[in-house]
Image 1 (cartoon, rainbow, N blue to C red):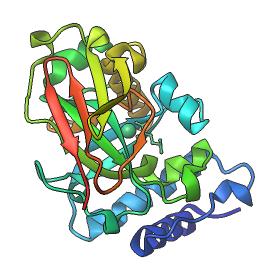
Image 2 (image 1 turned 30 degrees about the vertical axis):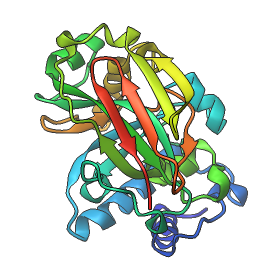
Image 3 (image 1 turned 120 degrees about the horizontal axis):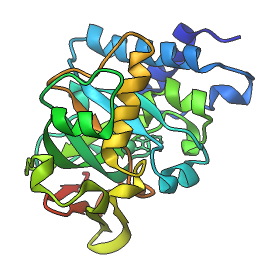
Image 4 (image 1 turned 45 degrees about the vertical axis):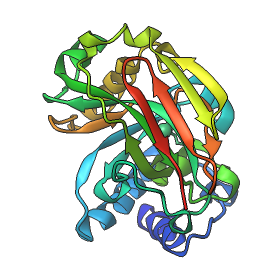
Length: 258
Ligand code: OOG
Ligand code: MG
């Protein structure tokens, strides 16, 4: 059975070479989630060792649209490090990624720790601000084909993240379940959703993560940014086609690459 460290080093090599690899599950059966999360942490730790900072966490596969698009029916989480954050308005360097895809998300900036047992209420009470975000995915696996343990090891396909410029307290917004989202590619509407697409309520996804981390003696910390998961299926991010996510009360975020 492949070890977590070996999985992490193959993923790091794939990322550095910008060359996708086959998912581990192609020739290893029964990689368990603990091993996959250990590989994920080794992947993230290598970035921290190189001087990056831990910024927060990202949920994945929290909406039916995402679960159906990726053919994996369970949520997962990964970590956000500093090099993933796109400077406001800056282009994404296409050559730094393998095959980027973009998806709209609701991001939470925590003003207080969220400890288990967490609920929608406790997450909202701990939230300093909510932002619109675009998650730029870049699976290290060929064609984004993976099983749950594969994508866990690959830090939830984490690539880059663009954040909107409008910070709003949750109570200043419409009920987050009803918050409308419009995704455009090159100006054309390609998908629409409401906040409830993510776990019934985006804060419920954050609570799930806090509770999941709680089982490992960890928690979400004040100051962390948490992405609650794609509201719609992702779309390819290619030069010449800007992707824009517009969220009710949060304005829009655009990503484009060169
Ligand atoms: C897995 C990453 C999941 C989300 O929001 O669903 C994710 C993938 O779709 O490649 O970031
Ligand atoms: Mg995402």
